View 1 (tube, rainbow, N blue to C red):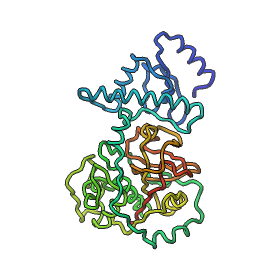
View 2 (view 1 turned 180 degrees about the vertical axis):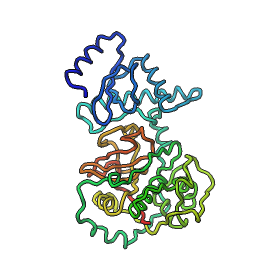
View 3 (view 1 turned 90 degrees about the vertical axis):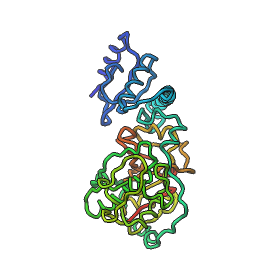
View 4 (view 1 turned 120 degrees about the vertical axis):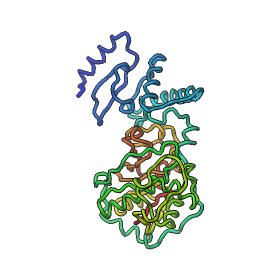
Length: 364
């Protein structure tokens, strides 16, 4: 562990190096483990918090490392556009993290797979949750007695600690957040009943729920997806109908479906207490959220609490797998280099980013 005295010695010795360009502070498992010159950086960029802008020479190397680390290839003028967006985001990261290091923010942002996207491109490519074609009336047998479940709710609960540890997914360029959210919510119901982890097909929902008003990789809504499952005759496994990040012809085979939706419901809007009850009593739930801010795009760690993340609009869907005293625990579909290994902690109690606006669950 790096002590304060060792930190000073390292800083002084590095300060005498004529080729020192900038310092980054790298963390692993929440412990400060080392200070490195960028030329000797061996840890993944996503495990590092950048506090100082590099020189132009070092920026070229960092851009090359970014492309290699995230397997990025650009053609023609697209590289110039993506690099410009990446440099702008790098500037945002540096400024934000300096303030976060001073205690002005409760979370850090960082380089990830989306950091070469400007705001417009990010919104076009990654956040495609749509409004449903009509509202389904809540099932009174499911929702009517909901608050009777409110007794003996723990202050903190995490379904991952109960064994619901699922793969980290990446939706890529397909606007399939709605499909992953519903598929994982139903997988959680199977886990709750059988203690077995059986991945379900998000691809089936992408390809086939167009019949209920969704748009495949062009986006969809949680309600339309649940309506589709109401009518479809079941959901296949991920293995039998794997994700390919593009829409194709519907290949659903009812004989290979392993789970049927018996009922589903929408929680009372903007009610975080109802969310807490549902997570503990029913299981992980699908929720819509506003993913518009660049801080959301670049989120890395900590309790996300951007006051500019408006609760008045939602455009993305995630799975709420638990909660702490001050945060919701959300699973995303942007790979393990986004957030805390694919998860986000979001401030509770303020309907931050509209997290409680539209929350749904299904029962199998």
